[in-house]
Image (cartoon, rainbow, N blue to C red):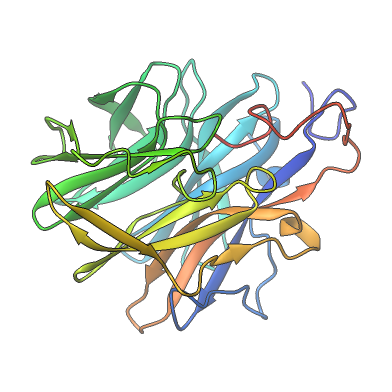
Length: 309
């Protein structure tokens, strides 16, 4: 069994997970009293992990649960891992909760009508697929195919009694964003008449975490893949969304996440899941990448093999 430090591992970048917080969703930073990253591949105990990425949180009762991609170093495929916390700051890894014969990532988890659902990225079966907790949080069963096609980072949200979903239809180029809608969670899903919303722009197309619905304003986050995949996270405010119309503009404080130049997120950041707590404070799980100096090789570009799909 290989470990991430074995010499045959050639990932030029390594992803880890951290916690950011702040008084505003647009002013999030690493808390001075919290040691980031809060999760790395070293915490994964039930498989040989090369990295962890794409974290999503949900609170059930008094406990926070975090779901994220664990890249299996033996199979070179992603699986979905689980960690838990009583305060969203001190996290304990639990175990892998979802494995398929193909690569999984981006476990977008959400609650609806008292039940918990997940839409992970599932490129190989050629569809966007819905899962339901059975039971939460340890087991997940597929419910059905929502949208046919190969889509990266599907991001679902509910707005004005309708379901909406962003997804990137060019997972390797990261430059095309499509929008789908449905009257019910299980569908039928149809593409918005103005879709693709973004085309030919790898700085604003690929989703980068949970969509926020704040009254009449919707915030979508996008991966900025310039100069390399996973450089920054940008924020876009959707001011008008109907079954026939769409209007957005980039937030004034965008990008909201970027590489720090040192440590676990030195090279870049590409994911955010922000939550407003009961005391009016924002907390978010994020991820970041650093150079894997022991495996850096100029012949290896930061392409599909190194990015958390």
